[in-house]
Image (tube, rainbow, N blue to C red; front, top):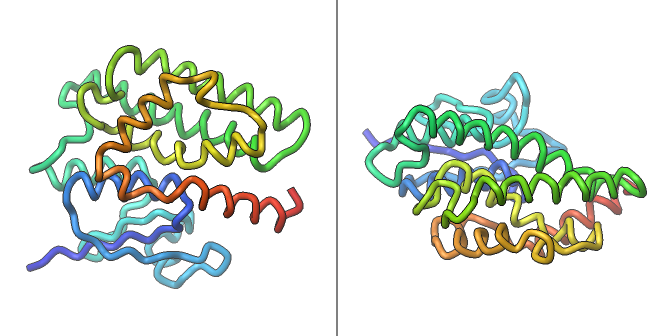
Length: 218
């Protein structure tokens, strides 16, 4: 019996992007179901009744929620291609730690940049660049956070890259100038078609963010 895989998502979401990348790397065919977060579909509310958020992966009728959990599920379910998490338990725990760091520190500081003004925005910029510099230390001289291949941490962070341009335009700063190693890493990731084909254009993201700022008076 053919597997049924659906992804409920909203196109600018860096959280949904990581699920798309993971599915692409595993070669998993799926149905993409775009969601209107201002008018949530009955399917989304049924599949994620607790948080009512995207992304949701629906595999043979069963929902999996929370993007980092979804990526791990994908890795464990489709084991035959492109392992995403390290096989060593310690390294796997470290990858999970840095994924948690990214989703708490990078997301929150990025949000401060585009969704606030004045001192709060400046604080966001400082926190954002501090987080990226810490991640540069973790990357070290490796090609990817996963070593020689794109892995869990890479998949989680690369979605944020599509928002970098928006942060730079709104915050009037340059990631390249301060964190060239991260930008070099991002360019290497984009050489992988599973990554590049799964990410939206940063300019399109910027148009969306500027529209959101205008709409909500930010």
